[in-house]
Length: 188
Image 1: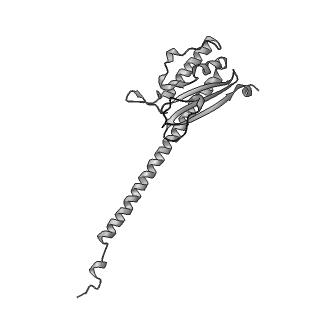
Image 2 (image 1 turned 90 degrees about the horizontal axis):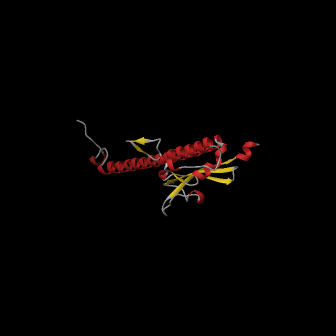
Image 3 (image 1 turned 120 degrees about the vertical axis):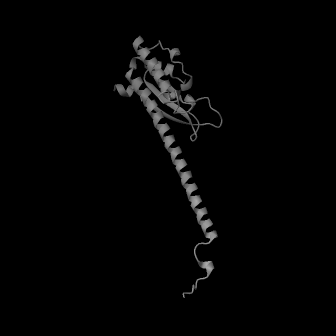
């Protein structure tokens, strides 16, 4: 006959040790979930910044492609609130030919649809990728230098640029992307 010399209190895990291990494991799972949530938020912010840069580049290329009606872009998109644009109300008659003016009007209308999110449709509804998006084309020097800016609401960021500010609330933070276009350097 074999005699067990180990006391009963020292065999296996106690209930307290099991609860402590479960508590440590639950903190690890919560930490992983919080990290995953931050990574997703960061990925979404980077995707928004990339889309904003694409929309800035879209308008820069349109201005470059239509030099006869450059001034129309600054007039039509001085402060373009994407969700409030009526494409039929856009008009420019001061620069270029009728064809170049019509092209500028069409470009600005497409830019407004891009900023408003009409390229992404879910359940027959346009989904804005950039919340409260505002697009601005500023003429820095007449017919020579332009700045194209896109501003959107974000959970992180700061104040919107003064020359392209959406209807702000005190608690809102904004991010912006911009590009400057100088035709004097392009001609040389």
